[in-house]
Length: 350
Image 1 (tube, rainbow, N blue to C red):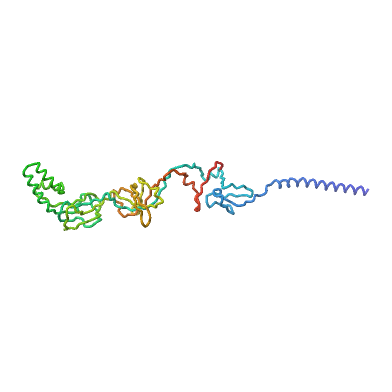
Image 2 (image 1 turned 30 degrees about the horizontal axis):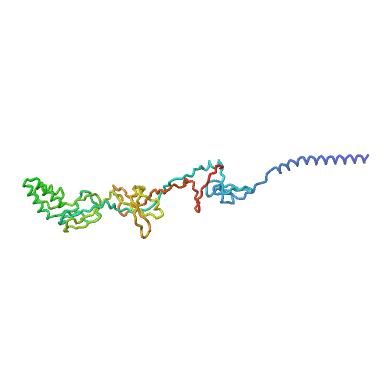
């Protein structure tokens, strides 16, 4: 009886143990399966800027080259050979766009320097019409500004007396042909028309003549003094007009193929802040500066208000046209890092 009871209790204990083990196994299997189903954490090798994938960084953050987040490079990722992948969302955020490379004739601005010079074509020499004496001088020094019609000097020309008296005597005869011939002889002695009219009006010889400035400008040369004797056709004054001036530009030989006659030029001067002057290259000068080894070009520039003076230093900007069409891209497509220039090629796949 006791033995049977003992066996029964042992059997119950074994069954209880088996049931507990079965239940424990059922609970442990899903947990093990869940753990095995979770992917292992991917190892980050480094971070990089998709615009400059050759540059690597040891931690995340903002790219020092572009205003965008660095991307992680995981172990096992396949790196493209120099390629960059930018998602559509990143392209939109960055405002990226693509342009087609085209052949164009480029117009690259050149910044050069120039010096204002007098337009030599405007130089006017004022000479004595006959031998005489400088009785009065109305200008005292060179570089003095003068106006057209302004008196420069008064000359006394005694040699005109006899010829004018002869003309007056012929006029009294009343012979028109003789009078015309005598008047013509006076004109051939360089007597101005206004002097001849005064002779005819007053009936007296007119031996004093005013020397008048023919143009606006300044005295670039004053060759006489008051009281000096002068000979016929002797230069007395040299006048330079500032209505139009020359700008002589210095440019390096490397830019020679880019500068052409007819090119438009814009100039600015420190003495005229905020004001621009416009002109055209008229000539490419043949001489080379012996010291700087630069070439020279001449620009013709209007100067009606006389703001540009000979000797002034100007900053010049002109469009230099290339000789032939070249492959061209927008300037903003060029990535400049300091040591090199980079262009990204859009293959259409991001």
